[in-house]
Amino acid sequence: MSDSETCLCVVGGGPAGMMCGYLFARAGVKTVVLEKHGDFLRDFRGDTVHPSTLDLFDELGLLDALLERPHDRVTHVGGVVGGKEIRFADFTHLPKPGNFTALMPQWEFLDFLSEQARALPAFRLRMETEAVDLVREQGRVVGVRTRDGDVIRAKLTIAADGRGSVLRAAANLPLYDLGAPIDVFWFRMPKQRTPENRTQGYINHGQMVVLIDRGDYYQCAFVFPKGGAEKIRAEGLDAFRDRVRAIGPETATVDQGVTSWDDVKLLTVTVDRLDKWDRPGLLVIGDAAHAMSPIGGVGINLAVQDAVAAANILAAPMAAGEDPDPLLHKVYDRRIRAVKLTQGMQRMVQDTVVAPLLASTEPMDGPPLAAKLLDRIPLLRRIPAQVIGMGFRPEHVRSPEAKG
Image 1 (cartoon, rainbow, N blue to C red):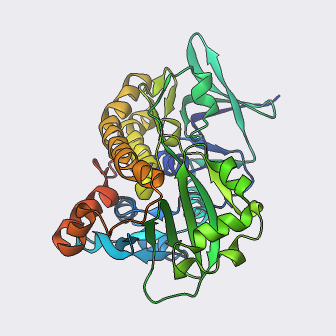
Image 2 (image 1 turned 135 degrees about the horizontal axis):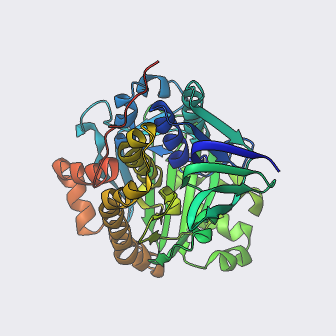
């Protein structure tokens, strides 16, 4: 068994964990990030980098370099509702440079962050290193134990290990399940590249499909009532493809993208949160602290905001050798209102729009009034753009940058 020492141990190499690793190391805090996989190449992860996150990278002087990575720009969000094309949100009125959403494969986003972090002398990334338990001494978390039996000791451990967080469970932090009436099938369909990004939702006949335009293919989200996956599978692959094809001409290539059920990945949607994010020596952030619905695609951006808030509050004191424990609750205090408001918005949409829609089998008699107003009054599209693009409490980088 080996034993190593660090100031900060971040568990999880997703958006929250990698952003934490970069910001704390940038401040001169000796940091190690543990990622259980050997690379970042996993499909159907959140790929939307919203304006609030783009603004953060601009504050760090990294935005131009980030946007050299493959991405597509989305300036408007719309859909086809009841057979009529509607525009819901217009990001172009947000302040530059973050006046669009970047659709970027998450592995590109994470690889970029890890590349920037590796250039910092205080940073270390350990791939294929899975934390399986907390190490405690005298009632305080002092590090983690890995699957290989290694012990990594740290003044502070940050759990950013996702919605199935092992460390959250090990810390016995109670989880509040808010419920979600939907699940999602993810799959791909080939398409021709178009001059304008054609990301849209399609809603009619008791069905909802979101097509995320990734250039030469659509990343597709087929939304259905909670627990309905086995019923859909039992109807057969041909029936499923027929349901997708009925959405419209955009889905005509579904047979090429879905050749077997292996091409269809299930996302079991959960919406939950912790009412306490810390124990002595431990802080929980990102999906581990609050799982989001896919509605609005805001999960990555909430996680990144958590990381920025944590660094703003903790990085300078830790770099100065201070005890972080008395400050940990301030991260929760800073972020919880934005989390609750976002989840409240998602639940409202789920319960009042999505669930009733999926329960209906009748064709829609045109779009609902709210959608019509958004389409007819361009000024109104700024409201959902602000909520989706910037969130309820966008953070700004206040953590220091170590000199020399």
